[in-house]
Length: 120
Image 1 (spheres, one colour):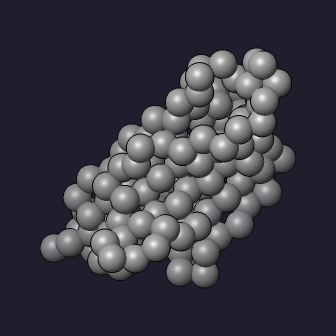
Image 2 (image 1 turned 135 degrees about the horizontal axis):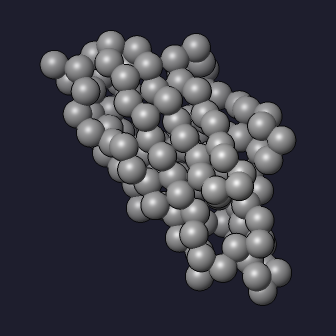
Image 3 (image 1 turned 90 degrees about the vertical axis):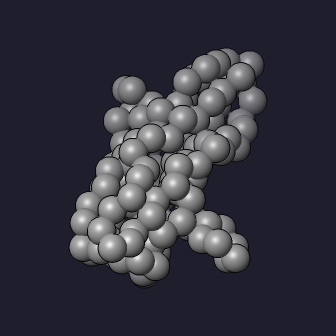
């Protein structure tokens, strides 16, 4: 079994910063693509940023220049540094990973989410 656990969410004022973390654990051989997604109230889940094992990143246009995704492959951990936060960034942020398990299955894994609220 593989788990993703997010941390770092909370309440922040507009213009502030937060750093999210996502740790993968369990029956893992390797963690391939990883990413952060978010879902605001009444909206569909959307991709925020993705990163592969080589460090190649992609960002949603709405967060480019403000958010930075990174990962520690040795620790199976991913981060999202969020700066210049706006009220429209308010959402539940989900961690995603594409994992090869010890039973050599390729599986998609999601975390339970962490709430980010940007408000004065």
